[in-house]
Length: 553
Image 1 (tube, helix red, strand yellow):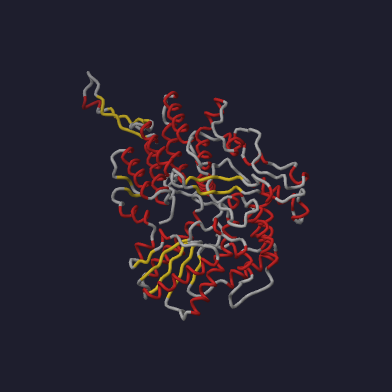
Image 2 (cartoon, rainbow, N blue to C red; image 1 turned 45 degrees about the vertical axis):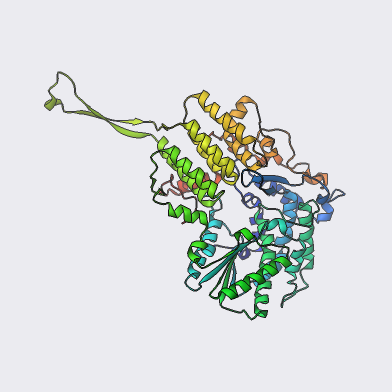
């Protein structure tokens, strides 16, 4: 069973939030590490009041307080803004939420908002000490509490209503934090949490350059902040349904902004969906009409379409092998799958499995040499001379062409670009011809670096080109984090709103772990995979290290 953050004490919760892997909950190259920065901020600020730390102005008045990581969602114009938020602001907010008294109030809030027939599956979970892949604990929790539970409920219910919130985090009305913590317009209101709410709202305003709309994306801290409001919406919905005389005969699963509503009566289900829409509207949320529907095929619609497609094509592509006779055909299949299900979990799995297939091709292998007969020697006395020799692994297909296909996959699926780049890095590293290898890497780099609004992709591209960039004394990337990797003088976050004594020894350079960077090879390695393998080695566990799953099944 997953262990939720609400099971922690206030100090444990703060410790949890002040870890690098919670500071950003999206995957980054393994040489990025924010632990030293976060520890420094925590030590230098301590219990100092926010107002006493200011240098005559608030963060809301300044630009570049946070570091934006833009993620191009569709390879064209749709952009998802992730944030590497200002570590000082991050600590102030985490300290506010996880303060002893405040933490008790927030845990009580979640307890009060836990209602019959509505189950939230979105509370941040405590990961295993070492995860086999990025956010594996969170994914397992979603799989068990959302997907599997939905399938189970098909035994009890005939219909399922499916919807999610459009631009959920970007639509958050910070004032709703106060409504939520005071449980406004419910049967259990309270006046005890206004100060907590007010402070949280002030910090959110600082994160958003003074804007009174939206919260950042990309951190467990903001997931928890958003859940404060969404849990409140569960309570509002439950009480609204009771007023309508709907007290049982339904079940609702919610994972953040993703809803599954189950019922045996279609007209009742439609009424529930209408009331849900009203509740969300009162909180400045709007349902995504493109992802909203009623289904009478619960099992198939409880599972994401990309996973259904993946399962349906198992005879073509499966965990034990692949029916494609060549690597290039396999890649083309993945590219077309990605166009139908862009940035999907199954696409990530397909790319990981293809990478495993490439690794297998590149492994040295033993072959037996045909019997050799020596002229002039009696065959019956000498016998056949048989030798076993080891040959290096090799990719015989056109690596340049396959790199072009992977590049296209990366362009069209930026959220998973690093998986495509890992394949390119592994294939090109196997090329003995330096000229050809550098030519392919150069062309891949030039094509991807021109993609607009894709900070995230450039961070991973640099992971592949770093050795060449150092050798050539170049940095083709305009991203501040990339320039920091090349030891350039940049400022990641604007801290001018703070007193000088709080920032003068700020260890910005430690964001790039120099020891890890020195070990970087042209082949991309993911942080969680390396840590998982090292933990296995430490424990002397006998396991197939080349077939670590990318997602639970």
